[in-house]
Amino acid sequence: MHVNVVFNPTASSKDYTVFIDELQTLCFDTKVMIVTNTTVAALHLETLKARLHVKTLHTVILPDGEQYKNFESLHCILNACFEHRLDRKSLLIAFGGGVIGDMTGFAASIYQRGIDFIQIPTTLLAQVDASVGGKTGINNDYGKNLIGTFWQPRAVYCESAFLKTLPHREFAAGVAEIVKMAVTFDRDFFAWLETHDLHVDQNLAEAIRKSIAIKARVVAQDETEQGVRAVLNYGHTFAHVIENQTAYSVYLHGEAVAIGMVMANTLAKSLDLLSQEDALRIQTLLRRYDLPTHYDVPSSEAFYEAFFLDKKSANDTIKFILPQGIGNYAMRNDIPKETVLRALKGDHV
Ligand code: NAD
Ligand code: GLY
Image (spheres, rainbow, N blue to C red):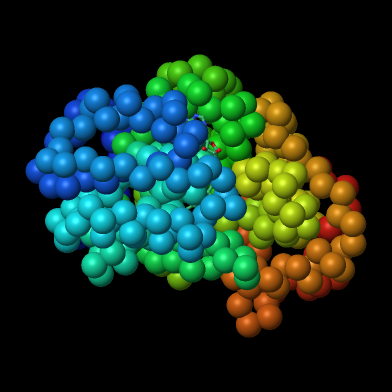
């Protein structure tokens, strides 16, 4: 199976293919450097190496964790590029979750003004979301992903076999992003998710394909997030505040997104965009994968103010991405503060 990411009606040099369960052997007549972390290297690096036929192969193994998505790790990747004398024809391979993917893409985009990279994502979240679309970056003291570039990979290889070793919570975090795509863009896909267990291999592969197809369509239309790409942030405006208030130590990102979607749904209901029945369907689906759906907002005022720390809040307005029924969305930056505060205080679902 595969999905094409096509940026233009006419062929664009940025176009690429996302291959699903099609990674047999990759041959490159260039220097190649794999970037991965300690966890993924221990579990899967040998499997990957056995499938690579390249001129010269190098590997950089970084420590594992979002806290290492920083300048130091970027420096480490770039230094390795220099030490191994990678040239402008060389290739980086991002082999890991979204953290590795975002950092490797960033390094590829700036090394010698930009070299090719491919994504081989090993988490569900990275397969259905982070590896496609070319957002790259690192975190700094001011927040997450505030430094980065748009740099598209040459290809993406999603192998469901790598997901077999994912911890249960990490798997569920990826499911949250799948649900996000379905709620905002595809009612039939949502109904399909309600009746298909993603722990069944065949269903998982199909859900990955459907999610990537949605993401590919969206990013091809709006690579740099001037419009529709922002819809992929459904649940994220709330999630970022929750992650921040809990010092990034309680919830995985996908878990915070699950709660954030339920909170966004409460706001959508109060604006008559979403029915109670549809809100319940979304919550039920998330809970089926043991995702959290509730957060005790300590202070609605403080939560509201924290929205403005998000890099997506422009000109003192907050852009809310809300479901309009299931399978459609509304982008609203005109919601009165009082309405939002009421929704934050209200019962979610
Ligand atoms: P992650 O990269 O931290 O991976 C989660 C954990 O799973 C890590 O401990 C990792 O080592 C481990 N892991 C990876 N593959 C494994 C495997 N096959 N088996 C067992 N363990 C494995 O987190 P993530 O959820 O993949 O990605 C989150 C990151 O992605 C965040 O930094 C976020 O900002 C970024 N992101 C980027 C985009 C984008 O469009 N670029 C979109 C969404 C998220
Ligand atoms: N994950 C959101 C985006 O790629 O735009």
